[in-house]
Image 1 (tube, rainbow, N blue to C red):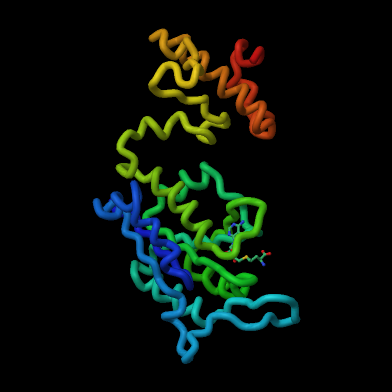
Image 2 (cartoon, rainbow, N blue to C red):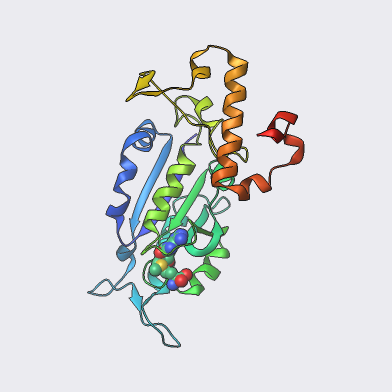
Length: 246
Ligand code: SAM
């Protein structure tokens, strides 16, 4: 199955990295059909204007609704009216983007992304879009970017690697940070000693149960140290007697 992704932006070149690495390969293999649309193609004035001053006053500019309306109509027209895309609008005021959300979105056949700039998009665009498709405003984190493009790059990368076939070894996705409420354990490769620093002995032992226990201990320690908020939400039933000692 091909997953369709449409991105609307005033800086289509910003999305060029999506031609590289695993996502570029997935596109060439036909696993992902990614189309980037220039919002300015949906303007009709000489200056290709997409913004204007805010009603009510205040600093900055707001994206005008007309080009957005036409751009989203154009995206919608690419597929069946009874199966529209899920529209993701990046914004610092949105719900936080998480691994669980990436997993959910990776199962959808068609996603569209609307990259805002300036002070954001005229609110009527959201109201209008909701009449035609599901709309989610999604935040990358509690900080403010200049535009939605960087957020879309991050979200598309997190979503695309969960689409079946994009990552060669699906097992590598299972034990990652944020998959089960714990951060990942530290990882090592060759050589066994580097600048007098040794790889933990247990990893060289070949003792699978001991390695699994060491990794679990490290995940718990790391999560407690860096993300106590995550540890606090772990289900008590998922902890064994040894976990509680770590
Ligand atoms: N005035 C807006 C506010 O305070 O909510 C911020 C606008 S920001 C300068 C311009 C655009 O960057 C937003 O429309 C959004 O597309 C994007 N953006 C900024 N911060 C973001 C974040 N944390 N997550 C996702 N998108 C973000």
